[in-house]
Amino acid sequence: MQNSGFAPIYGMNNFSKILFWARNFFFPAFCSLCETALLYAGEIKHGLCDNCRHSLEPAGGIKCVKCGKPLISEMEICLPCRNCVHNYDRLFVIYPYTGKYRKLLTAYKFKKRLSLSHLFVKEIIKKINDNPELADAVIVPVPPRPGKKKELGWDQVDYLAGCLEKTKGFLPVNRCLRRRKSKAQKNLNRKDRLENMKDRIYCAGHIPQTVLVIDDVTTTGSTMEICAKTLKDAGAEHVYGLCLFYD
Image (tube, rainbow, N blue to C red; front, side, top):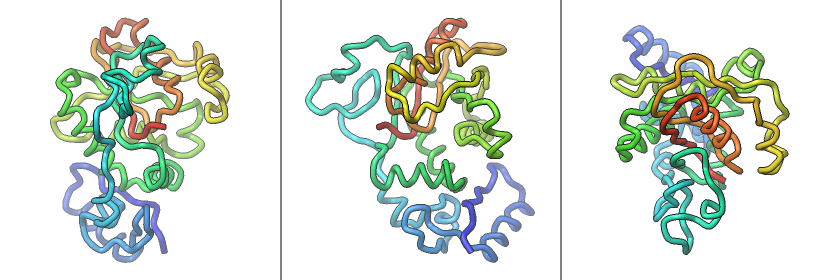
């Protein structure tokens, strides 16, 4: 029987750990990529077999200093970023949204393989530690559409924010962004996405001076642009973005 990728909670006590291992004994976990049985503690924790986990590589090479995507032949800034002005100060990305990486996000987002959050949190922390400008940033998750958490029981981005929030000594989280009802974004182009999200994202409560907006995937970048503009209009001085996957 295949489980849904149960993830142990950060800071769990000994009794909770016993329950965790008992569950994985009676309901064994399987790798989110190759579906082989997970046998060791590290495999179960990350929801991936050792072979698949070690095969994952964050995008390398020289990246655009604005959108974070790898450069092909350009210097410092990619061509799309040269032709537009971004609302965010800088965007950081980790994995390309292709092949096994697309399958990875599908397993986490749609199959609710929560153990993958350990992998994602580790990469987010590394990205923050490698970039000094993020040292004082407050994490702000991209808000889910209204009713999503009630309908599905969770939101994949807010869950990551919660994991980061529970990591000892890590950055604070502020859920100061809210989202009004709008059409689904996935079938719209960049122009229509921007229009669809116009006035749909708003701020509530205290606005941090330096913000790191986190999201799962960026395609056209419209959601990140709207979030950054909303935060800066509300008083944020610096707004950075971080997406697990880029298209």
